[in-house]
Structure formats: structure tokens, C-alpha cells
Amino acid sequence: MDSAALGEHTPQDFDRVLSSMCTEPHPSARDAATTFLADNPGDPATYPTVAELEEGAVAALGDVVGLDDPHGYVGSGGTEANLQAVRAARNVADGDVNVVAPESAHFSFQKAADVLGVELRLAATDDDHRADVDDVAALADDDTALVVGIAGTTEFGRVDPISALADVAANVDARLHVDAAWGGFVLPFTDHDWDFSDVDVDTMTIDPHKMGQAPIPAGGFLARDAETLDALAIDTPYLESDTQPTLGGTRSGAGVAGAHAALDALWPDGYREQYEVSQANADFLAAELVDRGYDVADPVLPLVAVDLPDAEFDALRERDWRISRTASGELRVVCMPHVTRAMLTKFLADLDELQ
Ligand SMILES: *Cc1c(COP(=O)(O)O)cnc(C)c1O
Image 1: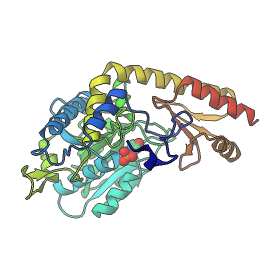
Image 2: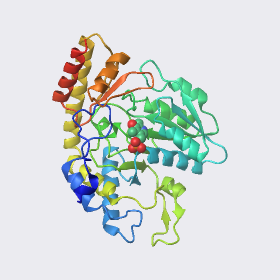
Image 3: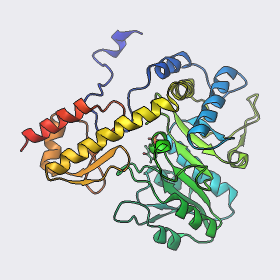
Image 4: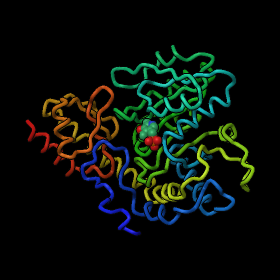
């Protein structure tokens, strides 16, 4: 690489990054991404090798989410996958439709609703930040094309009652989408009901570029039935392949090959070990914060949300901790693979110095 062109710019260190949902890629995923940088999975007849890798990655994602014969692709991220889930539901249904999601849903659903001209109805969450099923049921009606459940919310790491949401969806003849963009690579090692084998899920978002330790851009869109991809397919006159279900045209082979390599290296044992380490770190941090008198949302998954006064939050940011807050103001610490016990200990020491 011509490093002069980058001047003083070097990639960001992860050693103070606490609120990000991205992480350092697995080394073999990084290598694979570099190797396939110029291959375009959007044109599979011209680039068959990367297309084969994509089939392998989708099959492996199927294993992660309990689906034997998955239909889907590796796109740009969770935003695209969520948009495609809404688009598929809209295309399968007729007329003016709406989508019902909990207010904890990622902001990508706002983008999807905006782009697709679909009404988004946001249901309340309960005291534990999970979708309030009664409110979802109250908002759903004959025009509801899609009910959304979140398996690992962005702000609190909560898992919605997916089975109960499936019942609501079935009652109004709507589809069910599960957004496991962040949670999908830790939930297989928990007792939650969230995947295609547990519940009658139609589509799912699961991002290899978050807990999956793949390089960006790698987002997974998965469907139980081939008809879902048919509902998204567009004719592609100038390509050798006839149709394209993806939102992007030209896509990065880096994302596809990186996702394939990460899954190959880590599913299931590597991801299980990472989940156990990350969850133990979250439990450690939560306990340490409770000891110091802070109000902490119990880390159901490896994400700690803590009520921290503004002055302390600002002072920690001034010490270069890369932290962010929920809409209601809690500091979020996402225990990603790069977040080690040593980092958390340093963070707590900085917090103690502020007292
Ligand atoms: C991060 C996230 C998204 C968006 O994914 P991108 O890859 O950033 O587009 C969607 N849903 C959830 C639950 C997320 O945590």
C-alpha cells in the first residue's frame, strides 16, 4: 500500500472502544476479505468463486439460526437486511400495509419505512425494555404485513418474547421478522427462543460484521422460504444471471469472503468461547458498577447499560473512552470480542478517579 497517501492516518485502536458493535475481525477473515476485494458477488456468472463462497456463508448462517435450507445473501449490514425484510413483506401483501415493531427497534426500520412508503407503528416496551406483546397486538391489524421482534436490542441487549410475537403475527396473517443483527452470534449459546427452529420466523437479520467477527461490510439477510427472495427479485437484463434479490448491485467480495472465513473459523466453538468470555465480562462490569451504587440494567446478553451522571460520562469521553448513550441516557458498554477484562478494569479505575 502507498502509505504516504494516508499521511498520518492509521486505523483506530480498539483499546478504548466500549460502545461500538463492531470489533477487530478474526485474522483469517481479514485475509479472506483482502484476497476477494475485487470480486463482485453481485455478478455471480462473472465471479463464480465468490458466489460459491456466498452460498457457503449463507449455509453456515443457516446453521447458526437453526435453518436447514436457508435462502438469503450477505449484504451491506443490518440496515439493508431490515429494509429487505420490510420490502419482502410489503411485496407479498397487497395494498397499503403497515409494520409493527417495538420502540426498541433499531433506527434502520425508520429508514425502511421512509424509503418504502410503509407505515411504521411502534409499540411500547415493558419495564425490562422488551416488546410489550399486548401493545404489539393492539397495533396490529388486517393491514399489518410484518411484525418485528428484536433478539438482542441495540441499546439494552434485550430479547423480545419472539414466540408470543409470532402468535400476534399469525393472528393478523402477517409475517414475522427477527432482528438478530447484533445478538445472532451469541444467542445460540443461550436458552432464549429466537431462531427459525424455535419459532415460526419468516425472515431474519444477522450481521457477521458485529459479533460474527467478520470485516465490514457483512450483513446477513435470511429467509425460510424461497418465495421471499422471489418477492425481492428484479430482472437483470445486462447480467448473465437473470434476476437479483439484493438491494445493492455491485457488492464487495470482501464482505462475503470475510463472513465465510469467520464462520468457518469460529462456528460453533469459537463463537461459544467468545460468548462465554464476553458474558462473563459483562457480568463482572455490571457487578462492579452495582457495588459502586450505580443503577445497572442486568446484562441478559453481553451488553451493560448503566445510569451514569452526565458529568461522569463527559469526563470519561474526555479520557478518550469511546462511549455512547441510549435514547434515555444510559451509558452502553457493549462487550465485544476486543473488550477485555483488563480494559474494563482500566475503565473502572478511571471512573473511580473521578469520584
Ligand atoms: C446494528 C444493528 C442494526 C443495523 O446494522 P448495520 O449493520 O449497522 O446496518 C440493526 N439492528 C440491530 C438490532 C442492530 O444492533
